[in-house]
Image (cartoon, one colour):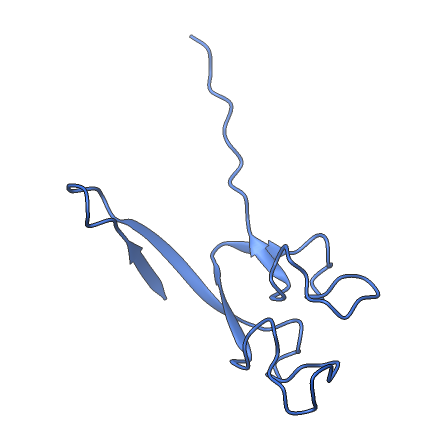
Length: 100
C-alpha cells in the first residue's frame, strides 16, 4: 500500500510517498483481544484496537527494546517504541560525504 502525503495549505510542495505494510499485531498475536484480560475477556487489544494488524512504514526491522514481542520484558504493557507491532521503521544510514 502506498500513501501520498502532501500539505495543500501553503503553496505547492512535492508530495512524499510513504509505503505502508500490514503486519500482525505482536502484542495480541493477531487475536484482536487483550491478551491479559485486564478489563475483561472481551476487551479489544490496546495496541491494534481490535484490528488484528497494524500498519508500519517500509522497510522495517524487529524492535530492539521488546525483541519483537510487542511488550516490555515481564510487563503487561505494550512497547511504546513500536506501539505493540513488534517492528519499527528501518533507519536510513546516511552516506558519509566525500570531501573534495
